[in-house]
Length: 272
Image 1 (tube, rainbow, N blue to C red):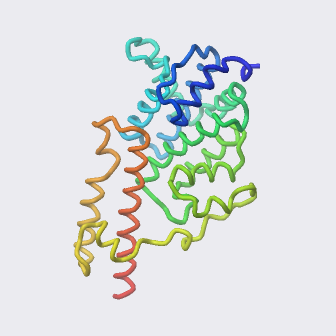
Image 2: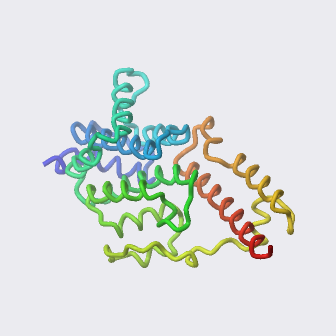
Image 3: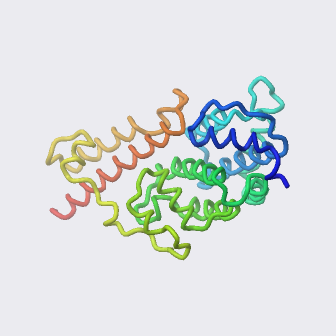
């Protein structure tokens, strides 16, 4: 019955998450609001902790999402409510806690495989890509680490989405549609896209992206790579309170820098 109540609250959340009305007024969501906030913070906590550490960009992302959605449970003027929110985030970090169970409760409140649920899943994918920028692996589906991908699939299923839908949402977050079309309507698709589906940047653009001249030595490339990573890493944005979109763009920039470096490194090995 929860999904038939608090319709105005769910509609306002949809408007905020979709960007249709970022400042849409939020009515009291009652138990639906509680389920939404609880699942959101717990999943963000679990994603942040999956590799054993939580970094500042992930905390900043969670705070920006909370602010974007106007969640009253984290009203900074009400310390008790803020402590409840922090407790949910910390609870999600505990590997023994049933985070997926909270997501199932959320699905009951907003409807399985609903449009709002898809936007929530998209938010979770954005959070997962923040962590992936630290250890990107081209051979993994969409660049996500195995633990992140497995957990996102559990969350997606709890929200009513199959694996194909989850991968498509992650492809949208990543800003590419080159292989997501192949997944539509096929929940049985299990292979990662071939590397050729995402070609490495041309050598000229790779040199340009790293800010070095053509023919730079391996040592020069390595120094340029570390310099560019230090300049563009998402952690650099934390003090500026970046929006989720700004963090995603920073993540994509870091990935492009890494691809450029790997492309040039392979070229040097081939010529050696």
